[in-house]
Image 1 (cartoon, rainbow, N blue to C red):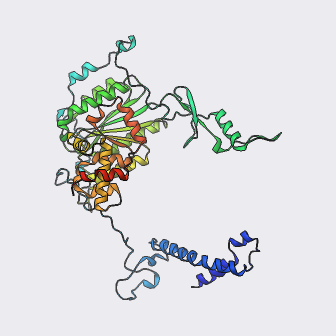
Image 2 (cartoon, one colour):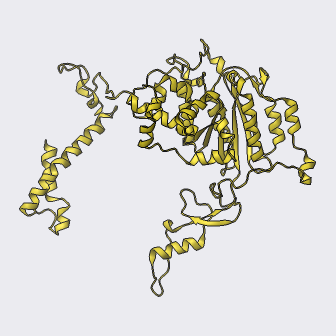
Length: 477
């Protein structure tokens, strides 16, 4: 009460109206203005006190830690209450509507011990993805390259100027200038001076032009920065029927990267973890030898594959800070193995789907481009029914279900709805990681797969209210 009273007198003698009317601070304003500032004081002190109480209720330590506790029933003092140490901690009013943490995709092993996660995936077990003779026939012959006899030409003009060239590594010729959004690349001096002149206007005789940070412009080049591509390939047993799709996708990626400065690496995942089969390289002969090692067997540790890829990207950035990473995950997105830290005392329930959400969030914070390619043919039903590209179809289905169930977040909706949690893995990773999901059969029809991946990393499907109304009839009640 004392704070309210003394605050009122302070407000009467020290308020913005003294500056507006030119009245000396510390003196009383005319009666009409005094009434006005009194009326303004009531909501001001109300919201100030309310804000203070909200801040204090979030404190869990210190002398005011007991303010966030409420004793059930009639007030009754307990030992320690006089020191602000009540026994009932503060709990949030709104609980998450997400129920259950089990993936319900496929039955995982009954017992997952710690030794299960320390085993390296066995690449020698299972059926091969590629035929060795097939890969040998595709191997690049050095003499043909030197003589110009290689006929496969890579797709050119990948998003002109979309990847920023650094000060020490510039590709192509400068075509325009732009205001930098992060670290400045190559400063465009004429555009910078012109921006400063436009801001200051005509200069007086003897006056010097002053350039501020807002005037700086950088050059955009026609060329592109080479990519560091990680092909994260699912070789679990569920991919047995999708080997043909994997081969076609890798053939297209090879056609667009072979002979360029783009570096490609391979990560395979199955059983209990992921393994780097080939470090990023421009030599496709090495990549062929790595692809020949891929064999299908075991379970699907999808979250571990994303984490392994981020470790490799971190290593590549230590070598070259200008690395432009792109992680391409090829899978049917049916995870059934969680991360190792999700299993142990206090974690009896399996969390493979929740773990891929955690891994995708880390990828987004690490500023890594993500693209997910689903090879499951049953996913074509979403395109047929909703009559939209794959990513937009899943986005629309999620928004419709979110509206129907009364959820506030798309990710929460997917985790809470069993049929979505089982089939929306590709969209889940892309949505959380800031990328885009693709369907392999739909993607193979495009002129350039890499162009689609890069465009998806910078764009986001926007579902309008008209789209929701037009498609509501597609979702079963």
